[in-house]
Image: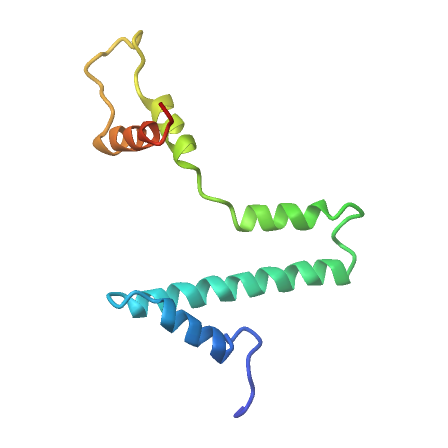
Length: 118
């Protein structure tokens, strides 16, 4: 088994790039996270290629778009996070006015509002 390269082993130039980008305080964590993400992305693309090769992707290709979107969801924007926090907060007609926002929800909404133009 010597000299066999697994297809999901990152190339040396990519490893060097990660070493250069890694913060000096957490090189090990950065490298592990980067390698795990890169490997997962490689596997996802291999699965998409397999679907295409076996013609399981449907005529419109929407299956591939949906698969990528479901497996690599984008994080909520600050605005979306703040709105979600407000949805869980009591409004003026709430029967128990003692219930308040958590400190994290308050900070999130404050940050979102600070980004708005005056």
